[in-house]
Length: 81
Image 1: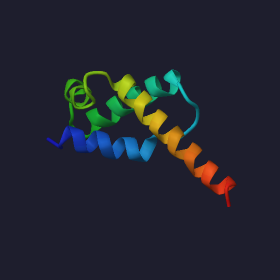
Image 2: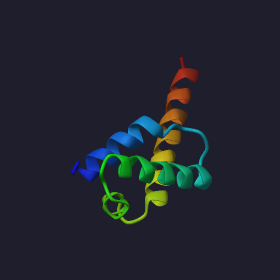
Image 3: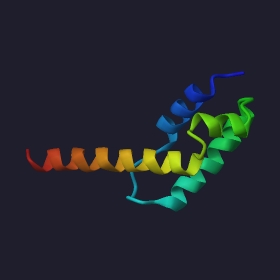
């Protein structure tokens, strides 16, 4: 079986994009899509959920927040030029 944390980390990098802050709907959709992808990769839902700290939606909400913050910093840096 693939390493669930490595799978989750890679999948998040490929699928999480900055959109909005507090975007719970997108976080839930990412969690659903991640579970489907994990199953196709031979990783059980419970295992990938555990790798995410017990709640995939919360994990992806945090990832979305990080991506939105990074995009905000990038845009602010461009404005200062």
